[in-house]
Amino acid sequence: MTKTPENDSVLIITILAACAGLGRITCMSEIYTMPGHLIRRLQQISISVFSDRMRALGHDLTAPQFATLAVLARSPGIDQATLAGLIAHDRPTIGGVVERLETKGLVTRHQNEKDRRANVLALSDAGSSLLASLIPQVRQIQPEILPGLTAAERAEFIRLAAKVAEAGNTSARAPLLPLKAPQDAT
Image (cartoon, rainbow, N blue to C red):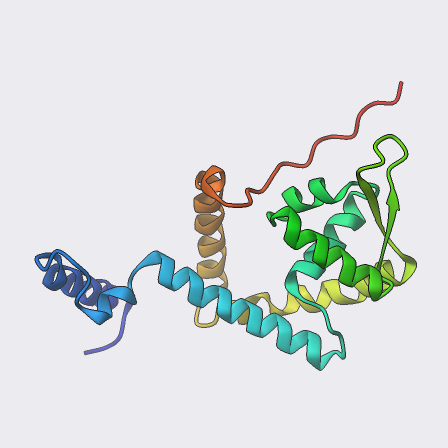
């Protein structure tokens, strides 16, 4: 039998039907069709592809660190709490990410003059330069993160993944917060 998406769907349905009457997960193969398991595997693939490329380029940079640089390029002067929301990370984690980027000389952190409890963040010149050099590389690896898909399938996968992420955002431990428009100074 030729392997097609339709045959895969029939196999998945057959497996689920066989396991459905058992009342608990006893069929190991059922786990492999569960969204949570598949999403975890895709995250592993994504991290591996990203990390391998950064290492090949001679950089010690994680995906959350890259996301931080990208957000700060677009929104200089935000505080850590805002940054955490803009990349959907919890506040304690983002503090460590910022600290490591500051140690690498890629980010600057200064006390907010209006709220001394908050730190204002910005890219350093080195951070801006590194980000500019990495953006084409990160764009280039995106198809490697979704191997086996055509360009049209990747676009559809991304559309559906974004739809699910948006629909479930409020259920997340660290929800993605929308970027607010800058306040008019006049």
